Image 1 (cartoon, each protein chain N blue to C red):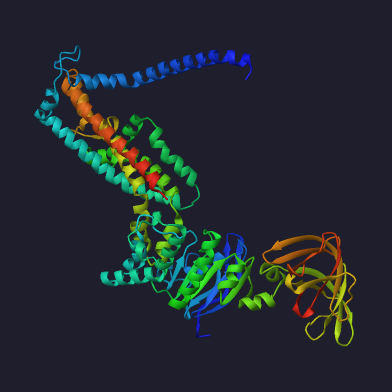
Image 2 (cartoon, each protein chain N blue to C red):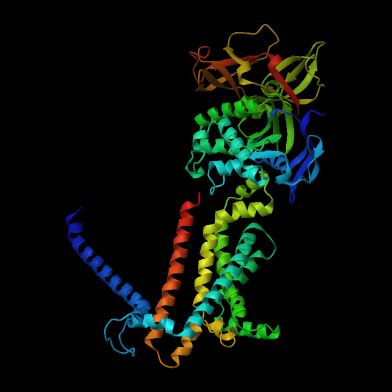
Length: 361
Length: 276
């Protein structure tokens, strides 16, 4: 508990009658790189703005290093923000932008110069010290915005979709840069994005926000392999979601049936009751297409259907198989494995039930 | 293209030439209507004659004799004092109003904005009489300060509207960034908001200046005794006939007002170009 730098307890935010953040509890450790991930309008930016001090929680408590900061105004919080559109001061040059925070805090002149230069070195922008911010490219402005924030040595750096305005190549570059800066300065980063790949690539832990709720807060691998809700499963990576009902079982297995097939799962892994409705989540890459005739000897499920579409994604092939009037499953195979398959062909799909996640509906 | 079309073409271009000729005539008459009196005034301010009737040759002597009229210099001083004073008041208040109108939402805001336009559109003589009554009611002495206050009433709207327009292009996240970096609201206003909208504020101040400098009606009502600013002073001179000295003076006022208005217009353009 005492090593947590930011603590959110039952934080709720309501704008007029619209509740955008609902009862969020989070504890972020010092030095962690945490990403708030969610679709636009999920409330992730509002959480960030409450930590920064631009919005006040309607209910709940926010604490930094154990001290409640609900009533501390933004300019007295030990956090700094990198804004989505950088928000660099257009009337100041690069040096003056970065020095802004130190000047309002009345640092001595020499000290300011030393710190600004160190911050510029950190983001590798030393040659631009006197440049007008308007003349800089998007990526350079981004670096200045980061320097302007970290020069104040905040306890926590808040980043609000900082790479949103950059093109793909620059994004990738800046992701690595941000990781490096995070390692170098060692402060806590709270990063907001709607890009799940970015979140997975950069974070120590990812907080998935779904319509104001904290859906899951865990390391990327766990979020991927053990999503807590169908939403998380669908939002992080791609998945096949199938509605099923629990029928009965023998001593060791449950029998489940769906609209178009039935399957058995081990009782050991799943705590379910007969008659219960569940949602199955199967990742496309854990599915395999097998020849129609081939029958499965094991308890692995087999579903037959018609191959409706094949799409190349890099070295992989995404195969779509229609297994019922409303249900199309997707399967990700290597291009080699997918060779020779034709659209319209009857195929069978199979998967290992250990890689399947089940949610109560 | 068919032959029929080819034959029709010269007719069409003839008609176009006619149209453009008539346009030139129309435009010329509009501009003549607007500017001929002013041109005559300027021309006759260089006329080597006591009368404004016929051209008797070029001279700049009327401008030279301006300093010989101590009461005229006094009027000029009053004009400048009133104009500068009211420019400061209206710019400060108008800037505050413009920022507030942009930033805050409050019930009746729309009505509030309409009320800002009213001093611009109501007849100035009504405003002047109202001011005179008001000053009498509160026993406020007429004179330079009364004129400053009076002019401010109709120049503030210009500043508010221009500053509000400047604020509409202002990125609010800049203020959040300043607060985030540790600036108080006051520091944010002085170090971020005002420097960024400064071109707008200057335009507002210049508009305010030029509106005040050539004001006659309000000044005439509230200037009290012996505090005539230039426009009222000129009106006084006219009772003895329009002398070329008046022409020269009017030409100078025109030049000053125009200079400020043009400067304001230029600033506005620069402001637009430099904004993001």
